[in-house]
Image (tube, rainbow, N blue to C red; front, side):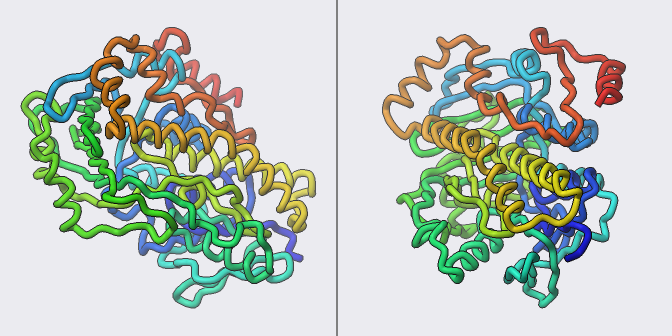
Length: 448
């Protein structure tokens, strides 16, 4: 048995890079296998980071870098499909006073690059390495990639997205062992009811940083948030013609993207600007299905999955990336606790099982809540029934604006904080929302 415990991470996205930074900080050996040719490729995806996500990034030591490059969401205005304003409210005062952090928004690749730059041992990051097969060999796992490369580690963590090859190998290993822990047909009950086109556009008309606008209508919702340099990050959610079950998720062509977006190009997003104005200024867009699931079991033997591979929420709530971050640091916390009890020596099968089980138990309830709330918000914004339409058009405007901020970002409360990293330091005074002085932030960092 090797003297050093080693973690193999499959996937160089948000969860995978967060795992690498956390493991490196604690002195746990690791390697990262990324399927793409580069870390942080241009895929057209944006990411919202409510306070709970920013708190984890603060713990990982990259808050300042993220804050310098990500815009702040400051105000929400919602319209109906005919261009009538339904309601509006300011985000920052309430959010800062409640959580001590802002809502941030930028390109996904920006956050990935920041996390990658934080890594010291970049030689441990291997690109063009898509996982093909995982085998348990004694008290190790052997990972083979599509190009024939082979890697050995004590455990493998699948942070490789909704199409996760690691998840597939986890299920295959269990089936070949005769285990029924995942049931007869895992993934068969995964529901996909919605899809979305995400895009990024050049500055458009007089849209300014911080603007967050929504248009709601039956079976669709369109929105945007304006980031740094007035770049527009937009999304067009739509209900699928029919509900899809299973993990062979629907895939779409550019022609289908056009068919869906054409239905809403004339929607008024804000006075003087339609969705069509924003869409014609796009630099990149991607259309994708939006499955909704939380698998009951996230591990088998020495394989564990995090993020979209096992918990997928609707992005309209902005909690997908945050949930992946929370699960990632929770997993490392429990691995580190097990290693400390074992004098930092490699863990037995029983110790690995215990750490994996504890991680799932810690994250299960919150991830379920986030997923359920995300689906509810998606159904509400796309007027899936008459009651939601009635409430959205006529009742929400009567609700206190601070209550609306609390409801819209309910997922930001109660986030998981790592117990092996410095505690997050509020950037705003809770209760007043006033900025915390740089001196006090430095003092808090020193105490950590």
